[in-house]
Length: 351
Ligand code: FES
Image (cartoon, rainbow, N blue to C red):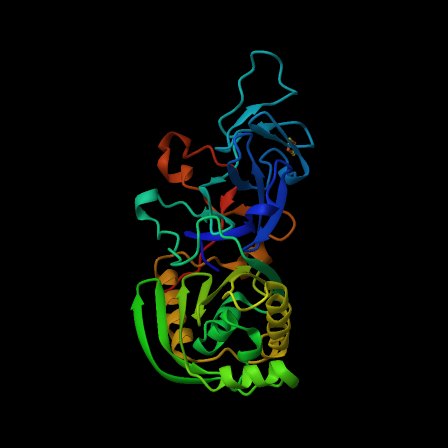
């Protein structure tokens, strides 16, 4: 798991003016909407005594901690401490980490890190997916690490999910493929031929004809968490969010070709993903081209000091102390350098 990337913490329709708690990267976050509709992500850990802001409420433009009523603006600064006497200023240390937040492709994304804007790896541009993506969607939770999930689902053969999950069986044949890579993505394009249909009757015959035709397809993996599959006019975006080092939630958005009923495809897609559960949760990670590229990108992130040391957090900070992913204000505002009460997450060393 890596800091300093954009991570999708929820779908847009999950976030409202009622604060919502999300666990990701072994951290707790609170998501909410301001009165102008903008979404915001803060660390969910109140700096006073560690209460969960997500148990609180919104008052004007502030989120209020339910325990002693401290109120925080969207940039994480506390502006009200009810127990203080009139005229007593709020200490500068009274602030929580606030993360840059955008909404795109139907998700709320937070930049979980402390890099300034010009140094950030941009949020991936997903060709063919509208800013406010509409389409069939769903989610599945795996008892597996997110890198293993990405390696399994970042496979060109899975591009048939984008047309119809029935075709995306293990027997799908992948022809010669072209590969193009950048620092933080890999695209694999080629022909795939689906396995024979298992459906009987009229639909079986129809599908048998379709199944004999090789289709142009592509899979693009955008580090750290997106696999986008295209085939036959359909597109499927899978977004993988690590809850912790053992649990991953995959949310998907399907933009269907006109010929397929969304409800039918949703059912098939859910069933096809479910059928992969044993393989993903129990088997070894694959070693295909995309998985190798993903490993290269993981290593690059580690070399840059962005790998979160989950095991140290679990052993040294369990229950009594807390650490948080640092936000940009920790670097951008020098006069606040001493204002942070909570320590930053430890990172993995590469030497
Ligand atoms: S724990 Fe949040 S105000 Fe006291």
